[in-house]
Image (cartoon, rainbow, N blue to C red; front, top):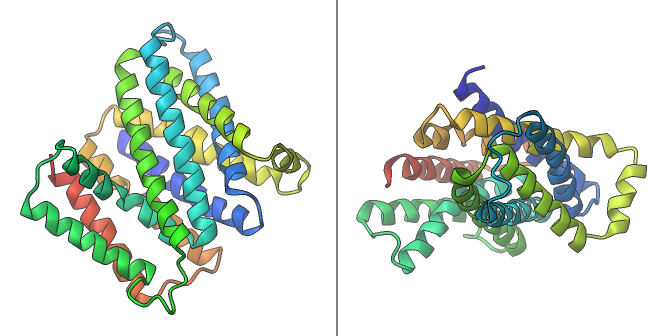
Length: 286
């Protein structure tokens, strides 16, 4: 299978996992529990991959452990905030807000002097903010069904994703991808199990819906991360940024078709503005 196809599948699986997470939280399951099972099932895949290809793991490198652990914290935050945003709002809004978060990472970088300002970047940020206003209905608070918690959690999911990318990129030169994923998913599992209700986690194993938690982990962390990492070896970050649009579109489609979520014409316009603008930013700005 080609590299582009692998990355497309990974983005599709991530979008699918957003829809599945939306269904589970809609059934009353804690977002942290959903995030825990997504990451812990992914851990089994990562361990199997490491056992199959143990060479060059770099597990003796302390910096590998530090940056991989940072990546794990980022993934834990991403999964948890994403499902919290879905539970408080909708799959489409949560996925789109998460996708727009690189804009806010850029703003932070601008404040600390890591990025330079330009008219095109300011214009792009303005379009994203306008898209967010249309998507969330912030222009008419009296009728908006998107809560402040949903918006904040969606943006935090994106910021957490940026932390994961930074951690993974910093760890990559020091060890194998499978070793990094083992550490990252291991940290995620420990952290989320610590902060979640152990009773709620235990109830999953006795619930008829438990296979769906397994499916969430298989597609949302196990196969998707493996496909994404392998696919990135042969394609450029520019192409990967364009392909990433598959995730929020898939998640939104799942929410509309299976969860009966409703998007107004104005919300769809806002969603399109955000996705296209962020993609252009990712492919054009250095």
